[in-house]
Length: 97
Image (cartoon, rainbow, N blue to C red; front, side, top):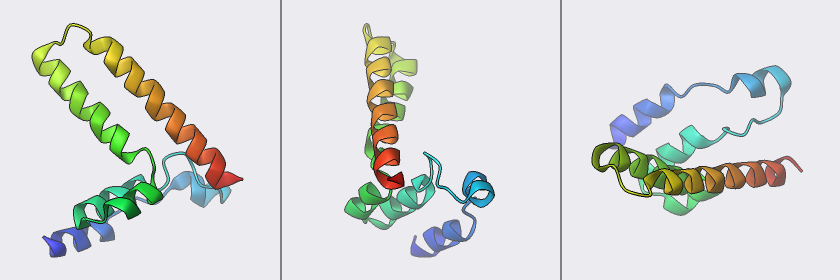
């Protein structure tokens, strides 16, 4: 498993926004955060990309909603989207300034 994770790190995509403008984008750190989760470094993953756990919850619920069609699933998904966007924007602002 560790070998697989090490190989995944070799194939991470570079951030073209950061390469072009020399400024991190709102998604910078998500790949490294997933890599840290796979290594079991959960706190470091949060510090790398604070929205990682709410994104996992969002996509998990989205997949469950597609399968089971929850009564108020669309409202929950919308709420999770708003929470995720808020976390991403706030962490971007904190990281930038």
